[in-house]
Amino acid sequence: MKPKIAISIGDINGIGIEIALLSHEKIAKICKPIYCINKNLLKAASKQLNIKIPKDFKTFETKGDFEIKPGDVTKKSGKYSFDSFMDAIKLADKKQVDAICTLPINKEAWSKADISYKGHTEVLRDYFGKNAIMMLGCKKMFVSLFTEHIPLKKVPKKINVEDLTRFLIDFQKSVKSKKIGVLGLNPHASDNGVLGNEEVEIFKAIKNANKMLDEKIFTGPLVPDTAFSPMSRKNYKYFVAMYHDQGLAPLKALYFDQSINVSLNLPIIRTSVDHGTAFNIAYKNEKVNLKSYINAIKEAIVLANSKK
Image 1 (cartoon, rainbow, N blue to C red):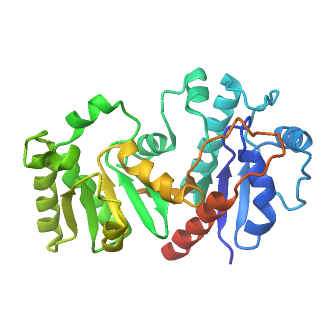
Image 2 (cartoon, helix red, strand yellow):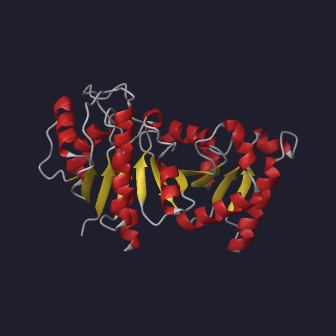
């Protein structure tokens, strides 16, 4: 039986709905998608895009009615993308679907709508009361983020033995890899304390985690500027980065068009595209890349089937 996947539509002023409509025929062959969007907005988007709504395009009626403004950051589109996401979460929490997949939201639009969260993962963490882990990547490489959407100046203060040890243990239990590289924070991984002392905390956390797992799973702190070199990527498929851009800049340089986002350490399955709303091309009938979304759906199916 094909798994049911709830799809939050993202910011409707962006490319999310176009991706959903264009990909439907392909993903409907491997799962049963349920799109969290009401029929009025769906028809309005379809008309503006000049893309027909497939006959088997099943929706969950996320409430809301407003004018779609392609490429604009608006309070109403931000609120609707959040409501669509919450409906998808509730469907998964009630076990009415096997997984959820999210299309891109706009953080500024969420802010305009007075939504305090900076992204999907923070919502999931709060909703389930679990330490959700953000991991991004593709079959060739995955990067998990110890800190996510916080100012860079706050990152060093977040690095401590207790929290990082717990993160490493939770991450390994989720991905079950026997070899994970952990990046240092400072240039040259501090050169033995010359450039900073955060690596002492990272080293202790690695040592603790390996001891608790009774196996040498984690290696590091790796020098950040060589951690993603071709030779290093031969040794590691999974990496732990200390902050957002440290992990995602190399990932997106290497695998931008195919990477996905996966939320780990949660009672539900959630995958997502690893790109933004692309307001600059929304509703302009320019070619949009569907690979990340299709990969996210495929990963959701794999994870859903593994839980059965």
